[in-house]
Image (cartoon, rainbow, N blue to C red; front, side, top):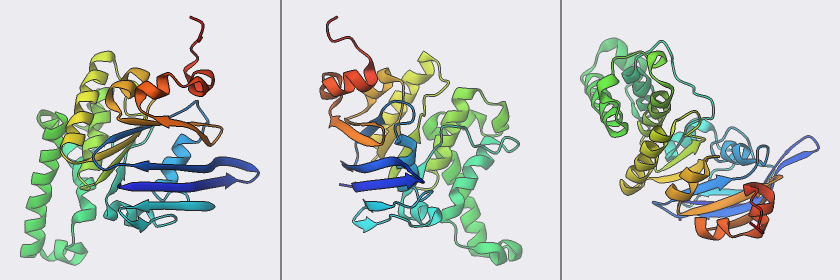
Length: 254
């Protein structure tokens, strides 16, 4: 088990956005977190990645409690994420955006950069090679020199994934990665998710595209009004009456 959430709770004033949510994520699997808009899914992600501090409960990553730990430390521990809204440096190239993700693994610091020490030069070469490797992995190596703002929307999504991969994560958190993608791009994303899982990564994602969720995920957790209402395989979730009523909107009599 790579991640364990136990009775995780977050309140904003009188609103309980996440209410005693518990689930485990097994290593080298794809876990989906689904539910209606406003169900608390992104808040759960923000708690895992250190953007919010839990009011109650515990988050354990690889045996270490990380609830309330600073975001930069969480990245160093091996958790990376993307966001619902694309957050690229639009006026930098695709390669430069991915190089930004390498920064957390570099140790030379500003003095080494100013003095151009051998160690700094070696790290610089490593970063270039590592960044290009991530671009190759997501299929953007031939667009390395293009400004990220000039890439198609689907490719900008892939570039965000490449930048997250550059941090060398063990757990990759994707917040609506298929948002704005067409059917062909979504199918390619599913293949990329399989490729990441098969390379040893664990993936936790929020996604409203049920086709992607049912194809890509090993297990699903369903939340509504901040509470977990179901957990299981995609097949089990599709047949769960609570999920049908709360989220999928399928008429059971049809």
